[in-house]
Amino acid sequence: MSSPANAWQSFLTSQGAQFNALGEAAFTDTGASAQLFDLSSQGLIAISGADNQTFLQGQVTNDIKLLAQGAQFNGYCTPKGRLLALFFSFTIDDVIYLQCPRDLIPDLVKRLRMYVLRSKVLVEDASERLVSLGLASDTLAATIEALPVTPYQQAQTPHGTLIRLADAGAQQRALLVVAGEQAQTSWQSLSATFTPVSTVQWEALEIQAGIPQVYAATKEQFVPQMVNLDALNGINFKKGCYTGQEIVARTHYLGKVKRRTLLAQLTGGQVPHAGDVLHDAQQQEAGQLVRVAPTANNGWWVLAECRLEAKEAGAINWQGQTLDFKALPYVLP
Image (tube, rainbow, N blue to C red; front, side):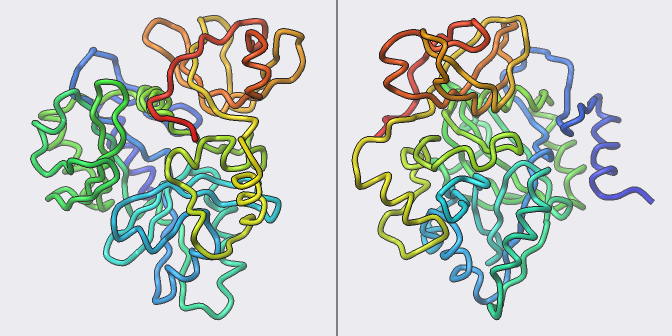
């Protein structure tokens, strides 16, 4: 008997999808303006129970109590303030969901459960309970009446929970979280308006929106500010203690952050990967790639964490290719 994940992939295969080793769906690119994405390569951790807010408040960088006002980003750190994961967090029916790359979830669930102790909390892998879909269009607000006006606000639709995301250039975007048993019906219904598009194109939109990610290759490499989590309102400096809080607070209060994540492009050729080392003009280590996705012209969109001093002193390169830096869509503190 097939698992729910395999059943979902089998369904999408019948709809023309092919899957890579990361579980990302690929569809034939038609250049459609209204786009539908399979985001099941992103998993979900469910935190339920009477004490779920109090429990998470002591684990992550943001103020969990503010989830009532909308979705938020969160960092999950080691005691030394290094990121184990970046979560996109939201609530559905009093359950808190933490979205991150699916292959990280088993270890994260195990680690979170270690801290439950006597709390009335249940930590579960919900990646097969719910299916995440992405929607993008330059006229998304006109297409979906329920779309909230403000990024990270939520609305309920016949398909499931709809969360408006930050725009990527002219593209308005939303995350739709659908019950697993309804996902196939929702996909077929949405396909009447939105054209299925490869998951890597969603990654490109995320990068253009300046949204970082932590992968297995980059775990424990970054303090939250190094990947702009403060600029994304993913750190609350007024909340109580959480794991790694001392380092994160010290980085904030002792002066300007010396390493930041910047938006850039690379030309075609070799394939870059998250975690690849960057070098400055003197070929000294200058940082590393945070997130990578292909461009439409056979190049690469990248988010690059680098020493600001090195960037100001000259070109930053990856394997000899100079990064072409672009303006981030938000202001760094």
